[in-house]
Structures are given as structure tokens and as C-alpha cells.
Length: 391
Image (tube, rainbow, N blue to C red; front, top):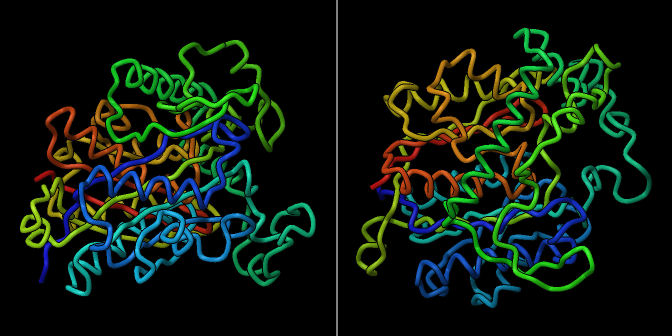
């Protein structure tokens, strides 16, 4: 059996919704990430045998198989196929899994796992409404789902998590402030070697190159943060606000995965190997708690404990998700999102998974760490988790 390794991993900076990347079509942005990946790796693009792309809202400019479109837009040989998949927020992390599994099986030698989301140009839920009307909520889904599972919006699931783990509004806001603090410090220290400088426009439409995540705040107005009303529930009854949940963003990412022996024979340097890849289902009403069993399963498959890890990326969809996970798993909190998370840098849905992988690998290399865990909560009650080991 072949050994699948990560040779290179990159991402664009994440732009705020309606911000610096607003004029970038998502198919072009994904092609930019794929091209940048190949250039950084120093590989002949013709060696790529498949491009697997994660994308959640596959409608509008993200429709028509954005994976294949990225191949064509990137100028790669037309005999390279591409595919788009949707495992919701874990989409491009799942793309990494599928690509590495195909390499490990010996089916292919080189694959690109990637992802994209422009939440500016393709609004969330556009794939459900088909652009015909505004999203009405779960009325647009099969009514039988409500009868069986009483599905709720993810914000309400985040509130249910707060109730179960006794997480307060103050806890959530403190976590959000720390996410911004860490992210701002990482930018100031020029830590993000995984970021591709990306063409962007300022508020006046003037072109410039974006080199950092646009949503990170160096100074937070704590009074304003405390004054924000909960997103869904009445004031004083809920904890989830716009300030302690992930930002809607635009961004793309890409990871080059290869057969280790082949890559080394081609003069490329493998940077990490896979110790575990898992996807789990969880309670569809609580919806976001799958990160707990996914982590436990991934660690068990890797033969590790939480204390063995040097770096952890848990997607900060909501502060309550990360806080409940930490209360259950008891990690060293200094190793959890050391450069901040989605509350600060944003969450471009299908683009986030491969981006967190690129960020984690850069973090492990910057700190001399060896073992990393990436874990993400997913809509409808799922989660993905990956354990990697630096080579």
C-alpha cells in the first residue's frame, strides 16, 4: 500500500463578506489557489491526476462542478479531471481525505485537494433556494426531516450546546477576544507562510494585494461586544452573537497530496503523513457536537492521546462548539488554535477545511511540532477529523 503524504499546502487570505475579495469569482479564486499550490511545490502540473474540490453552496458561480472548472481556469492539461463535493463545513477537509485515500490505495500518485467559498458572490443557502426567493429556513427541506429529527438552525444548536455545558455569554465573548488576540499576534509575527498573496480591491475599488486575513481585529470594542443582542434568542436568554461566532468570508485553499516514494523520486520533499482520517455522524438537532466523538475516534485510530498533540485546529464555527469540546477533551489550551480561529479570521465554508490543514502544517513547522489534529463540526450532525505527523 502506498503512503500518502502532504507535499505542499496553501490558502488565500480570508476576505470579509463584501470585502477585499468581493470582485473575485469563486471559480477563479479556486484556480488561483491551485495554480499557486503547483508553483510553490515546483511540480509539473501535468503530473496531477485528479482535483477534488470542496464547496458547500454549489450554485451560481460555484455551480457546474467548480473542481473541474478550476482545472480549466488554472490552465492545467484538459485530461486532468475534477470533482466538487459537499460535506458542508468539512467539505475541503473531506477532499483531503478522499485524495489521500486514493493515493494510499495506489489509484493515483498525485492529487490536489482543495476548496472554495465566496459568501459574498454566492450567498449561503442559494443552493437550496435556487435563487428563486429568499431562504425561509427548514421549510425548504423535506418536511419529513422535521417530523423525525426536529432540525433547527445551527445558531440554535450552538445555544443548546451552551445550555448543556453551562457555557455563559461571558465565556463566549472571552473566547472570541482571545481568538482575535492570537490571530493578530500571528499576523504581526508574519507566521502565515501558507498564505498566497492574493489580488484584491479596497473599499474604493482600488487594486492591491491582500496578504492577511481581513476579519482579524487588533483592537476590540469590548463595550460594543457586550452590547450585542443574541442572534436568535431574546436578550439575556442566549449567548450566541455575531461577535462570538465565525465570520462569513471569501477564500480558497489547496493541498498537494502524493505517493511518498513517487514524490521523493521526483525530487519533492514530503512534509507530513496521515495518522488518521475520520468522519462521524452525531445528533442532528444538537448538530455541532460531533467534534467530540470525531476527536476521540481519530486519536484512537492514530494510537495517541490528546496530550500527545503539538497543534490542534478546531473550527470556531461558534465559541460554544470549541468550549464544549475543550471541557470534554481537556487539551492544553495553548495548543488549541494558537494563531486564532474562524471567529477572528473567518470561515469560507467549503474553503476552510484545506485552509486549516495548510495553517496547521505551517504552525507545526514554525514551532517544531510533530503531531497535529484538525477537527470540524458540520451541519445536520457530522464532524471530520484528521491527524497528521510531520516528516
